[in-house]
Amino acid sequence: MWQRWFTVKGRSLFSIAFSLHRLTGIVLTIYLCMHLAYLTSIRMGKEVFESFIATTVTPQFLIFDILLILAGVYHGVNGLRLIIHEFGLAYESRKSILYISVAIALIVWLIASYRMYVFVMGV
Amino acid sequence: MDVEFKIKRFDGEKSYWQTFNIPVKKGMTVLEGLYYIKENLDGSLAFRASCRMAICGSCAVKINGKPRLACETQILEIGNKLEIEPLDNFRVIKDLVTDFEGFFAKHESVKPYLIRKDDNYEEPVELIQSPKELYAYYDFTLCVKCGICYSVCPAAATRDDYLGPAAITAAYRFNADSRDEGEKTRLALVCGDNGVWRCHFAAECSEVCPKQIDPAKAVQKMRFKAAIEAIKSIFR
Amino acid sequence: MMANEVNKINKMNKEEMHTKRVLEPLAWLFQLISGLILTVLVTFHFYETHFVSHEAMEYELVVSRLSSLGHKIMYALLLFFVVFHAFNGVRAILLDTNFGAKYPQVVNSLCFLAFLIAFGYGSLLILAF
Ligand code: SF4
Ligand code: FES
Image (cartoon, rainbow over all chains, first blue to last red; front, top):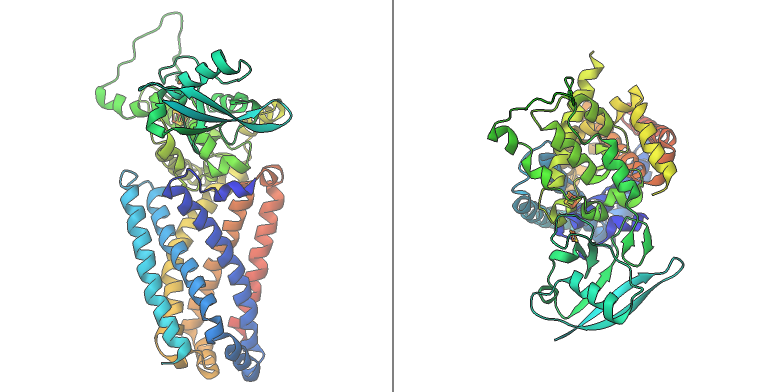
């Protein structure tokens, strides 16, 4: 049962990191398809594209942008952590590496979200 | 002191929770608690155990959500309310007894024994090994085949034929042994799509292993070797 | 576990198909490599469209980026790696299940098809300008 990929009870942070990695991976795949479809508007000309931008680059969509950035940043940073270990390095310090990567992900997320906020609000 | 044992039972058809209150002394293990129930409260309770000293690997159960060996877990270390369930990722036969046949079959399938060209059981010869060579694999020999690692593995949860951390660790243990000559064979055995590629380093196995032998590490090393071996085979 | 599954494991191990033995390792390795490359490319993509200036998403600018050769190459690489990484990831997820164990070829072909479609569709944009 696929629900067990997301078991949290009784599990360590590593399992939770795995669950989130899988979850964000699925979210990002869906977003990728949406993004490719969205970009079709560029081919349809200036008016269509600008109307797309006008509806999506708005304060109402900001929350989705920020969540998406969180998913992307987490998947990226956690992915780097996995690559280190899957290439056979540093198992012994995997706890500290996990904490560090979560911290990095949070920091990058906050910075990127702030820039996104500035970008959307146009301040 | 009375401690509450809430046990998830299964009678072949339905599963239900049953609660027992048992008197506990300092130092008493969960396994002793289970024996107390079986001997004094409900003789129909089924669980598995043998050595009572954490070397046979029979008694793994889930205690308050975490899989552990019942015989090396002290009740009072956990608290005065215990929730005991059978291991995840295994079919439950009765109460806390789960079906290990597949787990052992997987273990067997990676050939966990020395493979040598000069095998001669009529006139065995001594195989010399330095301490350094011993320590290259020693930790991984400590596995007691308790299945705890397998029970928390997210890949094993959804794919029944995944070899699982314990079997791959066993394969690694023999591949890392300087006396062994079967490395290629075992690499091929773990290289299928039910093998090392199903691991995504959730690394929970290493967190829960009662012998702390780090199965996740063995799986990563095995996979790295398997990948290199497979890529080399393209050019051969 | 049932006896037939045990048999399946033994059978599986005996007749390892050659393609299977190369596909899985290469897919794994390339997943890691594409992941590494993507952290750079996606960060750059995001930086360029959201950090530099508010005008970055104006139609003329978008089109001018799409028409420059350097950007075309960058977008093509980004598209290729991201689509591969996404659908190889989906493939790995599906192979983690009993369904994947039963129909590995179906999973592999479907994911490859999805990869081709998404890559082809995305390329239309890169080629349009
Ligand atoms: S590797 Fe550890 S958890 Fe897994 S079967 Fe062996 S002793 Fe048990
Ligand atoms: S009874 Fe042998 S390990 Fe617990």
